[in-house]
Length: 336
Image (cartoon, rainbow, N blue to C red; front, top):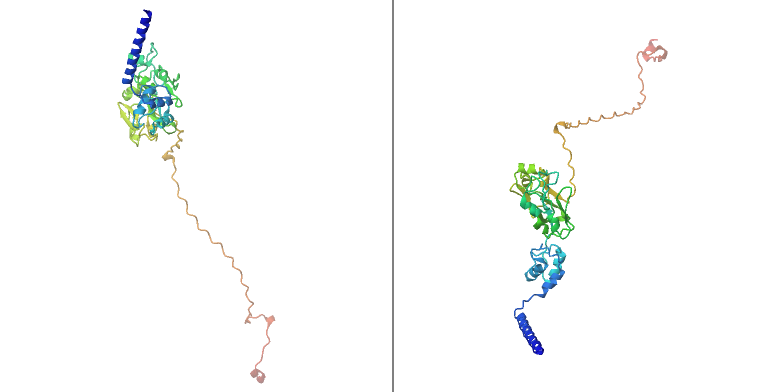
């Protein structure tokens, strides 16, 4: 009986294996072997910054795409995309590096605290309960959800200002902090030449007076920056200005005219100090130079001419001592 049972179970197992093998071949899903090759050269962060569910999804998208335009691994950057292009025999699309930017300048000194939150230290939870501990309901809450979301240790909360700060060297522009911020104050922007960029560090949509009262550094929507920009890169909507980094030429004219300092310039050399303005009333009119007096001609020195001695004619009034002998004529001698 035992032998019959063993043989029966063995036969059932063999028949089942045959059916499973046939089914696996019948319904086999073909996977391009290049997907595994591409996935091997990817960083493996699975951050989702590329827009796909992990590195496997990104590798599949790269293989199936006709070109690599619009596909970028933010963590690996251009070097990794070059390797992917080599494996797939495609040209790697050039993409400008991006970096996370915190668009809030409401420091502890600029935003007076109006209440104190005593609950779970989470931005996501606190934002669902109320606007925050200050009068600005649009600004950063400072509880560090962005810090917890970053897998590269590229963002930290500054204890003095209460705001998150991004380390440009570590930031991979994966976008995890952008998704984690419930106030939408973190944005991915073009890194710019020499890491220089200009942006409005405020998202407050209240009117100017209300925004200024809540935060000294708030954008009041005055529009001076938009009028000053020669490239039409600045727009003012919902009482707050925004700089389009695709149009901005980093001239920094908008920074100089912002009355609240809401526009920030990063990694620029210090500006040259302008010459102090001179009061026009204190400037003495320049006197015209006097014409030079004509030079007096030097007197010519005349050389005295030597006069030759002239023979003096005998004068009638001669002195008696120098009398001349009298000569007698013929007639006078005859008369004698």
